[in-house]
Amino acid sequence: MATDGADATVQEWVSARAADATLGPAASRVVDILATQPRLASYASTAELAERASVNVATVVRTARALGFEGWPHLRLELRNRYLTSLSARQLLAEEAGDLPLAAIRRDLENLETLAHTVDTGAIRAVARAIDRARRTVVLGSGTFAAPGVQLAHGSTSMGRDVLMERHFGTHLANTVARLGEDDCLVAVNLWWLPTQVLEAVRIAHEAGTTTCVVTDLRTSPLVAVADHVVVVPSEGVSSFPSVTAAMAVVHGILAELAQLGGDATRRAMERTETTWSRMGLFGESR
Image (tube, rainbow, N blue to C red; front, side, top):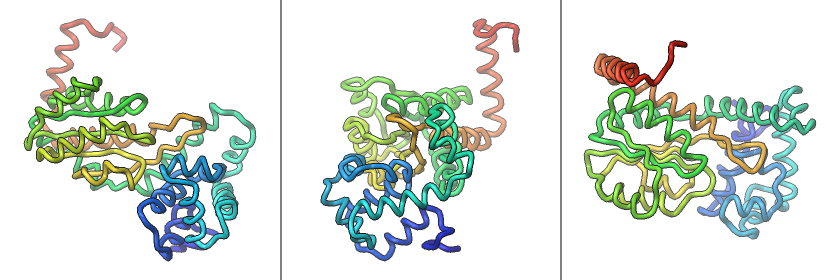
């Protein structure tokens, strides 16, 4: 399969370029953005890309030269051309028409397609096994990224697992993490900006022997160094907000694997859950 020709995907092309270059950690973060968020990188200024990759402008310029270009504008032009070439006619129409709701849907479709081609399904299964074996599991997610965590916690508890979605930070989060041990599991969902408390919570849990699992959009995230299992997802959106659709799809996969692992025990637990819902009158007659 070609990796540096006209028929290569953007990610394959960037990876091929990077393979022939000597890159430090900071430059690798820039390359990670180019490969996983080509639309953003295709239109970003040097300063915008530097901010997104948490590096300085000089690092962006050096990275472009290491990849064989005179500077960032030349690399950006090539990247943009390859990105637009990869789009279908309908997708190009959405790009040019300014129909943001449609563009958002198209972007999520592309994110899911990228996920299907790049995701490590073994890592998804490993996260499910970690939750299945754990005495209890704590799920972390801040702001927008709490949504996949809420789904993971709700689905898991419906199947009889002891899973807590930790919505509080500060001393409350510190107390929760302090109680984790070797028989427990911590799952952190984090895209784009990384809150200091999330990173430190995962570090503390990892040091305590807790199985740590991370869903992130950056292979170079500091979370990866303290995670036993890592699932990388695309998160590119059409505005200032990242997309969590791919992360939600991964959660769907974790829950599906968890249900299979539990077998009859999961079925019985779900029956008990639905019986409790019914007794408490949570739903009407529409079902």
